[in-house]
Image (cartoon, rainbow, N blue to C red; front, top):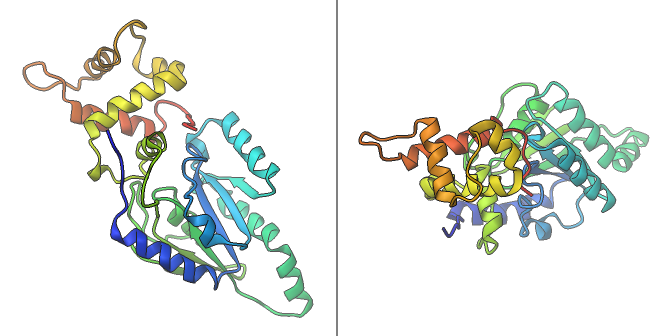
Length: 277
């Protein structure tokens, strides 16, 4: 299964981000806490340049707490300003504003000393479906952008004025032209950062269960029951499918429905709090 997805609008978005970055005071870089390394876009480093960056490990409620702490400490040890977040949580706005205030403390103090009531422009970036628009809505305290739990919802840049002298620029999620590391591509597909419509969902469901058995077998067992440890992965998968009732008329397994079901179980957190990186 070879995964690659880089529609034309992403190329235009990257070009637009490069222009807009020059106008911004800082960047909010939204990462998915379940794939905090895999959701780094290597093309964005050159766009960000020397701008101050607040790294946000979003969807922390779906990720393994210990691993989230590990990655927070790793990024902090590299001198980065980073927070973990649940964008729908009550504390999201305060955590984000505190992070931005820390990031821009020097500039804010200088403007206060000069009695300048500045508006700080912040660009929000990240791969698709990391929750960028939800973060902006949390900061604005009401829905001002279009959100959705799938890749490719935000189609154009949107400036959103919020309180506390900040204006945020929402941007469409962007990948990079060639996903050479197919394990990274799989992880991005599992969390919904690659559009389901361009994927073989039947095969992706099997790849997900195979991956989770290798990485977090106990949580798979709690959700779907035990399996023959000497069995082939397709036999184990078929057993899970039959337990869940993913059966067509005639007794054949409905692999498309199974793929969708297992992916939904993972993405919604019903299998447990799992970090893939």
